[in-house]
Amino acid sequence: MLEIYNERKQALVKEQILDVARDLQDQADEYVFSFINMVTMMTIRERELRAMNLPAALEALERPIGLPPSLLHKAEEVRLGKGPERIAVSIDSVQRLAERGQAILNEVR
Image (cartoon, rainbow, N blue to C red; front, side, top):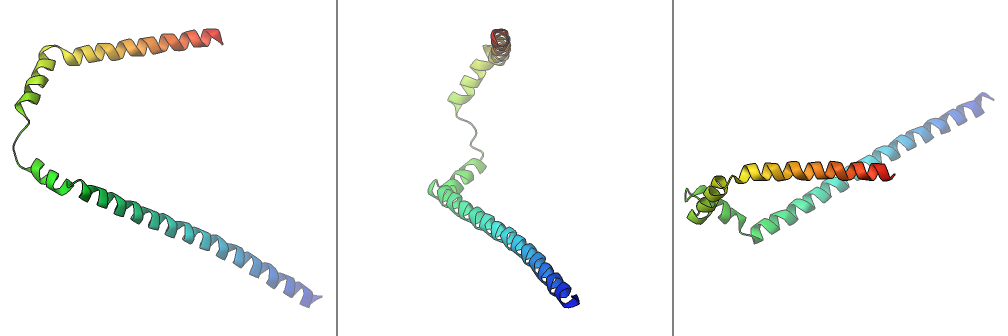
């Protein structure tokens, strides 16, 4: 009787150890897969950046050449035409219309 108990106990302990080992292996596999996936994505992105000659573009930005005059002129026109205030008013109007639309939908339900 004691022998059967010890055999069952040993089998149960082995089973529990194997379950934990499987769980740890699954976690390790998932970690390795995630790491490989991340490295692959980084490699793809690096190739894409090199294809776009990004380092050269960054070097161009480091030189103090400033913004094009046409862009500066257009920005000044927007400021003088009260562009930021008009955008804020438009955002408020859209928000009010969205709230009103939501209220109408709630009434219909």
